[in-house]
Length: 88
Image (cartoon, rainbow, N blue to C red; front, side, top):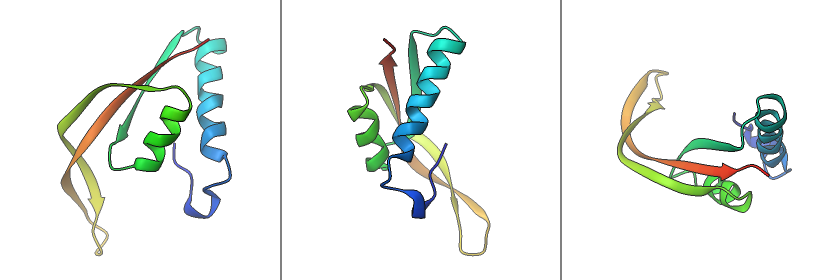
């Protein structure tokens, strides 16, 4: 999921994460969840840590797609962080 720029800093991302956790726990019966996030997305990493997620591993050889000014996509290096949370 993603939250548009004009809707950020209003608690929407936290609400979305908690809704996904509730769905995973109550509807699907999972007792833990995992997510992937780009390490450079510091705000998201901070939010996930605040919500109880812990880093499991990092992939420093990952690639991501970046839009160019012409509207094309180019591949660029990134670091992917896998995070995990036990659901209570």
